[in-house]
Image (cartoon, rainbow, N blue to C red):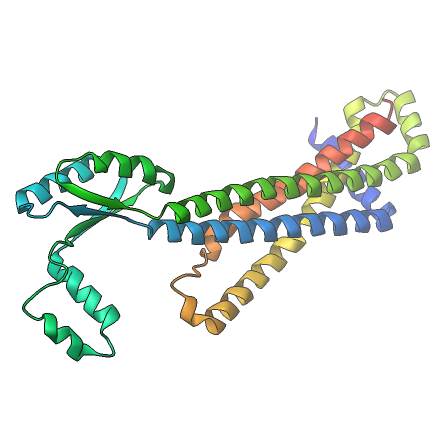
Length: 302
């Protein structure tokens, strides 16, 4: 297609939008609502997943040793942990460190009580490795493996926590897909109706164009451009709104719930919008394109 022809099609697409102001506005509003809901849902979901992932990273497996094991035996177990592909990182806690942590947590109001154990560590056999895995779903299989290692007395992990986090992640994923499909269907339906109105208004003009030899693409292009432009405009508005809202919400939550800042961790805005902006514009343009094509095939016999 020549540049002059492309510019003509673009101009006609914009003219179609201007002619059908009411329907164009309705389509823009609907796409804006769809993209806004999808964008908000995406923002909430990725932040929830980020929070869950952060929580998963803090769920460790504790490995205790047989009584009387020497340092060489402990180091051998550590070497097996380090060699395992499922392991992200691990830490060693000596019996003395375990007792110091216990004292801080349980005797902070009555430090004098801890003095009674000054020369006798009640956690003398509590040295351990705390292991963090790359994937929380591997906790059971890893625990089973380590239980068979020589010198290991016990392997403790939070099976209920793992199950709950995994189920929650899957539920969020399924719900995301269902909601997005419904919103996309509504947007495509409305764009299709808007383009249909434009076709009805220009039916006589289209017949004349065909009589003088206009190609199918020349006739169809303005309607496709109309749909894409409506989609892009409809997507831009909610993206700007979500950006402003995200800043305000994060600021509000961090101020009002500062005590939970270690639990509630938001993704940086740049990380979210690096995906959300192209996704939102793509969804808007895609809805406009698909809606236009469907309407053209149904109502424009060229």
